[in-house]
Image (tube, rainbow, N blue to C red; front, side, top):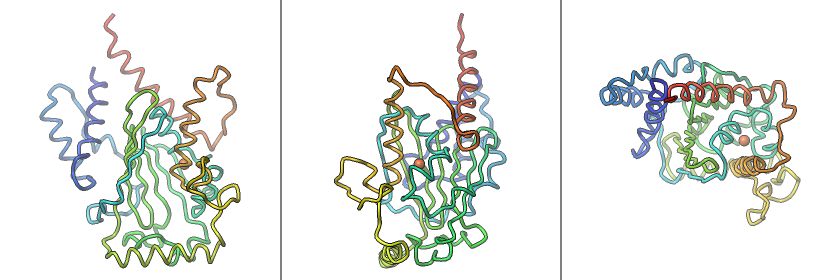
Length: 294
Ligand SMILES: [Fe+2]
C-alpha cells in the first residue's frame, strides 16, 4: 500500500497547480508536499525534493519564476494512444532525425547527451552550427536571459511518471501527460517566455521566419513537398507535434494487429525506451504485490 500511496501522492503533487494561472515551480512543489504530508497521514510519501534528487544539474539554467506565461500559448491535445506510448515517444532519441527531419532540424541530434537519473530521464542536445551562428536572426522569440552561449541547446527531460520539460533558448515548457483511458491521453502544454511587448514578439517572429527562408530556402516537408495544412497527411503539415501525435496513434492501432510483434530495436538509440519500460514494470509489480488480497 505504501508504494501505491506514494504513486498517487506524486500524481497529486504534479497536477496540484493545474488550475492556477501560472506554471508552478520548486517552491510550489515544496508547498504541495507540505499539504499532502498533513493531509495524508500514514501514506509516508517521501519529500518531493528526494524524489527529484540528482536531476537539477541536468536541467536548463532558466528561472521559470520570472518568465511570463502568455494565455495564447496554452496548448491541449487529445491523443488516441496509451500514455506510455506518448512518454516513450518523448524520450526516444532515434526518431528525431527521421520523423522530425524537417521540423526539429535546428538541433544536432547526433551529439545529444542523455540518460536516467533514478526514474527520471535527462536529455540535452546542442544546436546545429547553422542555428548557432545565426541564432539572433533565427530564434523565434526573445532570447531567455539565462540561456547564454555557455548553456545554449535544448534541455528536454522527462520527470517520471507524467511530466516532460522542454527548455530552449526562447521558451520554457511543461508537457503534462494525463491518462484518460487505455487508448486515450490528454496532453497539456504550457509555455513561459521572456517578458516582451507585442511589437517585440511580432518583430522577432517575422525576423525569424524571413531569415529561415533566406538561409535554407523555401520551406519544404520531410518528403520535399510544399507544406499544406489542408492535406490529409500530417506529414504535409510541418508541425513536429502533429508528427508525434500521428506516430503515437499508429503505434496504438498496431497493438490490435494480430501480426504485431517487437523485433530488433536500436542498441543505443532505443535503449531509453527499453529502460523506461523496465521502470514502469517495476512500479506495476510493486503495486500488484501491495494490492494482493489473496
Ligand atoms: Fe518527437
